[in-house]
Image (cartoon, rainbow, N blue to C red; front, side, top):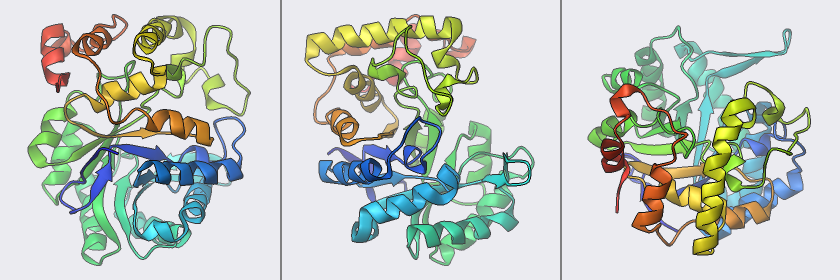
Length: 332
């Protein structure tokens, strides 16, 4: 398994990391705990040592199940968890809160569920639009000094927010959505993470499963699957039709290389400069095995450029030059 440094923590993490959202048990159709546990063990056996979760996934269930699945191995792997999204039982709605007062409360809850004395990497899940991020990371740094967390991470933050956080303390990881369909948002972060020795971690790496090639125009999702909602445009309307052009290209390259579309999509991320680790979700062992096989090889220059030239990608004017984009993304 390929690996990379986790910021300045001294840890090395696998370049593939298992995402814990499906372990939460909701939002992705039927999720079976037994299969979820087996998926964690399969990831561990494949060489994955980086496991990502959050307190909001299943309202704590993901953290508890991950701890159960890892058993004593939880002390030797790198577990990342996130805080900042809270649930209001009275309204049955979630809301964002990264206030300094909430940091420690959330952290103690995660430590208990994960059965750890210290969480190797602790993220702000989402900025709340109210709290200055400097105040939040200042409190997180206190927790780090007390040994309650190892590294500090920022998820779904802008370059400006990252720079503000860096005025207070060092940041070890930044997590952002990035895949062959949704890649423009990650691009501005490349320079700042490289400058400060921050590892960039991608979520949504397979575009919620679309890039596996399993879905087409006839696919339908149950109401308990978030992909059934119009708020997930990758699976609806004109965007879905455009996205299928990328899927067909992945399928063509898969035939030529003997790989699967998911492996090609993940490998493109792994071959992209500045991306440190790629998150993937899995509901069963077969999905883990498929995704884990994205390591240990590289795309050819030709296939890499084919994927860069997918014409469904839309960038801001600053990044519309294909030549400039290829230089930034190319790592061969």
